[in-house]
Image (tube, rainbow, N blue to C red; front, side):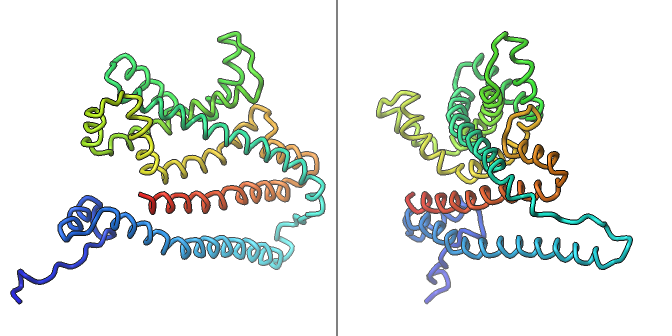
Length: 300
């Protein structure tokens, strides 16, 4: 057999760009569905080791912290004399759980409404109406260019003064959170929409679908699958960033934790439990959403 007639090696998607791998795979006759399934299987194959690695890292951090405490106590009289008193924690667990309920409520409502707003923002950003594009661009830059804490304070204290509209505290906080996340989700959706091949949009135009029908039935579902990892990351970050609402006196998990630490004079114990509450929600949610991502990849 001549060298030029030798069988070409099977392409690997991990060592080159997706477009190059897709082109090579097409040349050797592999269907697109098989390529996507292999990518999903590869993700599932390495998902379990990543989970184990994550647990090992967390365990190592805990061991290091505990070891540092024991070493510090063994250093002698110059060591810190703080004595951990965990007996005060159980009586405040219902109080902290009540705050966690409000934190979860704020996170879920913000994620759902923020994604809906993000889709509208992305559609407006890609529209052919220049005034709308200018307005949406200004909105995105303001939301992304100013701290979320400032936006929360402004919505809670300044919005009633400027507009004369007195909203409930939870509603004021939700307005700031949704507007903030709508800008970030909007940019993510815009990038995903622009990554969809132009041929699919042209096919939709041939079928006579309107702009909003294209968004609903063709563009948004594909975009959601493309940018799902980004949406997961931003949503988990949002859950942790809701701790900022404590600055305006809203009784979320962080605010209740700070109140309990002041009442008991045991800030280290109470705030450690607060951190455990956040981690106990964020880490399993990350694993579940990762499974969802792999499931959607297999269905493509």
